[in-house]
Image (cartoon, rainbow, N blue to C red; front, side, top):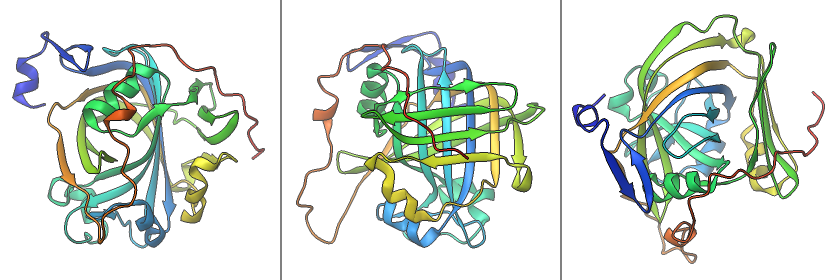
Length: 287
């Protein structure tokens, strides 16, 4: 953890009307992750210039991460991330190496969609860090043999994910994870510092299911040729700290875009409500 974050622990900040006790961190929050192979060539259509699909041999990776935030400076909420593993630079990175040399290749994930439960989470996550947050109907369920989460909009299923949790969750995780997002016509990069323990299932032992429903929002992702899960992760109690250092770059195009990208008008009038939308209830297709 950077020294500057340690030094302001216990102090306070007020940003866009949102009060924070520093550092901006979450604790005692379970999370699931499922990683699926995708067609890396088709993944390019979802990524802006300068962001390239990470290649694990001949495949790209779709990463679905859901966190049930229970203790944060802005209350409780579920965050449902749908992202593509990526690198950032002038040229695509070689295969596999970005997983070993993450800082050199600026390895991370490009977030395609990021619904959350509460209005205040949208206001902070999008307005401060540039994350593509919006409110959705979400849940997070843990049973003995399954961890799952459902994401609905407009009474329709957007996506559903479930994993079979590992028997043990004692593997230590201390790392910096980078998120790339598009907002205000800029590419935004933010980092979360993780210090937790998890359990992992790999390849044939990675039992997971990811369903794209009938809502139009993510229909284009069906073109990614999503395969069976190659890894699942369960974190029974995540501890994560958002870095206060944010990077951004102009998104550039061959011609001037005809339509202005989403900007501050989407968050400026949001309030600080911690209320959730109603639970998702759209039917889930049978396995």
